[in-house]
Structures are given as structure tokens and as C-alpha cells.
Picture 1 (cartoon, rainbow, N blue to C red):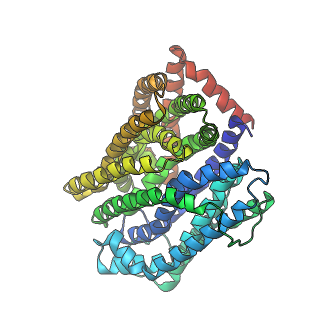
Picture 2: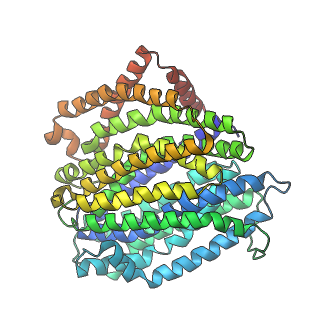
Picture 3: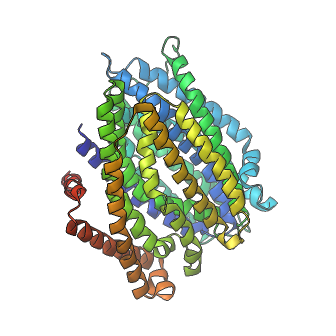
Length: 529
């Protein structure tokens, strides 16, 4: 499967997944609110397995397993002897992790939200017992999905989350029908209500894992336990995983500090739930652009690195940065302009949207740097190097902790936005360090052209974003119609982004940006497919 077709399939699945995910979040916010003690309690509990998924996907799987699966897939049997062993090892580890997490649920809630009141921690713990089984299913989903991606079977992993979202939408809608909406206070939460919300979240993850299991069987890879691990090469993988485990600890430590800090704002200010919803909006362009385009590039980089074709690797890096940059720069600018209407989609009041918007803006400022870091970090993984990413992740983690502690000094109404801004700044520093280390590893990267491209894109995106924000002000700004309702917020976001995008394309066409024609061809190819 070529890059254009692969990225088209991923983009289509990601788009549908993200859109249904947005609907899922809208229904959840309608049920339990975005700013309040109950919504933050559920947010902390449901984030525990999500944190494990993030650590698995960006650490052990991406850094160790994907390059190994690429290598074994080129063998005569296509990896059919190795992959069942890999799945068995993963399932064993995940079952153990899930069981231990269930036993430690109260302690985990205290670690991540020790600043909650006793009643709020009790509700969060009750949610956690329903949410923590997601660890196993999230892990198996990521393991099978990344393995299929490495074998150039991109479609199932991109589309399976749609099933999760549909199940969740149905469950949260049932909660509203039975118990009413905006249940964001601690009072009145009974076992049945907790079970319906927490159980729905977990059932959705189970459903998407079942879908991927069907795809795994259809791929021709045996789906059976295989405990014959001796001689399978897991010892070598374990050596590489030592460094990714270190990355897990660093990232987890920084995340704990962040969550405990913003939990102190829970109640009447933007806190855990707003942080998660803002991150969800941020992930729409990241997933739709960076993951759909960058994932096939990563597979190709891994293939070139395995064959020691270093020049092709450098060409891939430059091409990926140019392509990603053209799209993510305007996505960030347009969504920053539409921050308040976009936040209104995931809040129940206009005043809540104004509290949430700065958090979204702080995240969006990191969109372009993180797109470049995606390619740089995965180039290290393609060379089987998990040690170097550990070191620049360690630097980033230490900086996150330090700047989060500084951000904790601001007034609570600005606390969550300040922590998000600190994370963005640390991500930029991490990128600079990572590029320097990659250059030391494989020589000059030839990034002058791609970086000049990013500058051109930014110079066109700034006035485009200003035009988009002008549309928001023309519609009345904070007092206008865009913040009066979720639907109006969605319509306002669309109009602002459309205006910004049109100006951006016009400016790039006027200055005859060389990357524009290839980007237009890519979009046409995606739409035609």
C-alpha cells in the first residue's frame, strides 16, 4: 500500500472517529458538565487507563515493537510465528497491570487528585473501579493496532474507535434520559449512576478491541496463546524497553504533578475535565493531520533505516515536515481564533467556555512543534534507539515539573491554562534538543528547506488567524451568538476556520508556495479515495 492511499484511509477513519468522538464528549458534558466536582472526579478516574494507553503507544509499542514487527513481517512466514508470542506476552503483562491497578485504585486516585475533598476522592475512586479494566483492552487494542500498522494494514486501527464512540454516545444518552443532565455536583450520585457512566466508558473500549480482534484474525495471523517465548528475541526487546520504561516513569511523574496541580482548581474553575476536553479538541488536527500523514511516513522511515539507507531517511524526514507543516500551522491558527466557540461546544454555559478557551489556546501553540517532534522521535525508534529519546524526554519532564510548580502560583481561575502553557514551552525545548541529538546520530538532516517552509506557512497563517478572529468579533465576540449554544458554537467554529483557511490558501497561492501544489494533490487523492 503506497503512502498516499495509506494516509487517505487513516485520515478518513480518523476524521469519522474524531467527529463521533466530539459527539461523544458533547453528550458526556451534557450529562455531567465540564466544570464541577463530579465531572472532574470522573475525568481523573477515566484518565488513569488513558494515561496507560498514551504511555504504551508512545513508548514500548512505537519505540520497540513496531520496528521489530516491520522486520519480522519481511521474513518468509510474514511474522506468523512471532506475532502470536508477542500478543501473548502483551496480554499477560496487561492482565497483571490491570489487576494491580484495581487493587491500588484508592491510592492511584490520591496520587493524581490528592487535592480533591474526601467526598470527591470517594466518587473518583468509585468511577475508577469501573474504568480501570480499560487498561487491558486499551493495551490489547494498541498492541494489535500498532502491529497491523507495521504490516501496512492501517485501516482497522483508524476506524475501530468509531464503534467505541457509538457505544459511549448511546450509554451517556441513556444516562441523560434516566437521570437528567448537567449532574456536575457531588450530591445524588448512587451506585447505578456511577455504574452507567463508568461502565459505558469501559464497554466502548471493549467494543473497539473486539473489532480489531476480528481484523487480526482476517489478516491471517494466528490468534492463539503461545507461551513458547524462549529464543523469540524478547530479551533484546527487553533491553530496548528498559529505556522506554524510563520514559514511562518520567512522563508519569510529570503528569502526576500536572494533574495534582490543576485538581486544586476543581469546582468553579477550569480543571481536570476542561483540560481533557481541550486536549480532545487539540487532538482532532493532530490525529487527522499528524497521525494520518505521519504514520505511513514512520513505517517508510523504519524500512529505510532497517536497510541502512540513511539518505532516504533524511529525505523522508524533510518531506514529512513540509507536508505536515503546511496543514498543522493553519489548523493551529484557525482554532486559536475560534478558541471560545470551540470551547462552547464542550461546555454548558458561555461563561464556562470563556474559562476553557485559554487552556485550548495554550495547547494549540504546541501543535506545529509536536508535529515535527513526532517525526524526529520516531526516526530514533526506526533506528532501534530508545535510549536517546529517554534523555530528551527526561529533560522535558524535569522542565514540566519545575514550570508546573511555578504555574501553581497563579490565581486558580488561570491555573489550568498556565499549566498547559508550561507544557507547550517544555515541548518546544524538547524538540530543539531532539533535533540536535538526531543530527549527531545520523549527520546533517537538511532541515533548512523544511524550516523555511514552516516560516512561510506561519507568515501566511498569522493574518489568516486574525481574519478568523475578526469573524468572531463581527458575530458579537463573548456576547455574540457563537457562545449562546453548543450548536452555535460548532457553527461559529466552522465559519472562523473556513474564513482563516480561505485566506491562508489565497496567500500561499499569491506567493506561489511550492508545497501548495503537492498538498492540493494529496487532499484531492484523499477525497477521491
